[in-house]
Image (cartoon, rainbow, N blue to C red; front, top):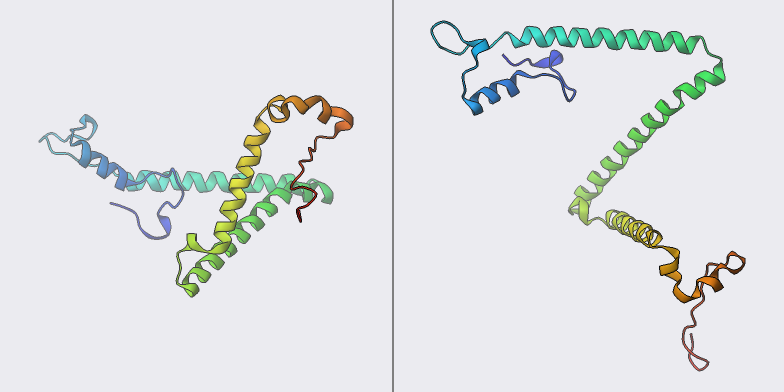
Length: 172
């Protein structure tokens, strides 16, 4: 039977009986490990195995947490601060990302538009395209980018090239 409620696995990679049932249904091949004498298929007691695996996982996480607390308690405050800094940064990042996603959803609903059609999403796409173009431009060797002006550009590390626009009679 499939577990439901608080004991059900919520993390990726956790075993599930639904996958096993669908595997047997799709392949429709008898498995000799689960055959009963009269030839009918019998599923193993997967729920007990899953509960045992979850209990082992919880116990190992609890043990890791206790070891980390012992380690942190043995450190000076500045060392403790450095140890938990990255975790706090990641937690803050996830919080901001969730807030931003909620804002996007709220604005899309309020304006009756698709999330991808909002202006700030298009600006983000434009920024990503410009970053990609910049990276592609930097991937081209300097000799190909500057061409015959390479020696002139290398003088005094002046890699900016000025191009004249317009003429003496134009407003530019």
